Image 1 (tube, helix red, strand yellow):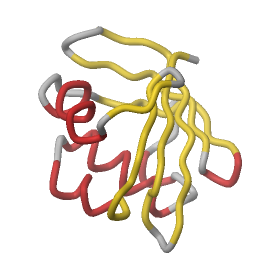
Image 2: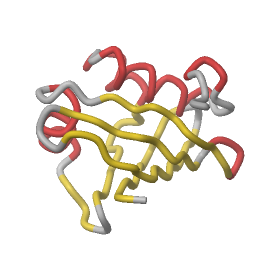
Image 3: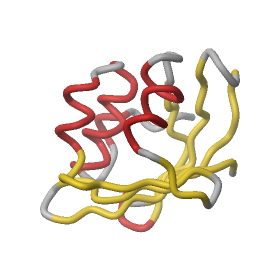
Length: 107
């Protein structure tokens, strides 16, 4: 059974997932610290380019299956118009209530 976004433990991660699922670029940027970084399948990516393509332009959606590491690690069924649905893992670094880095890839 999926975990409701409102039940996610870490407030910054909760804001991140909420913004992704609402397709709200402004709220997404607000969840990130200035200079935040990311990687996809182990390769660093340009965060604006990647999120534009993989989340916002393709209607990305995260259905959370599991959280661990105090809410900083998620397993999710991720879907978008480009790739369909896949099981993914997400790892977050949070400092000062903002996501400073996230790493994602197939689970």
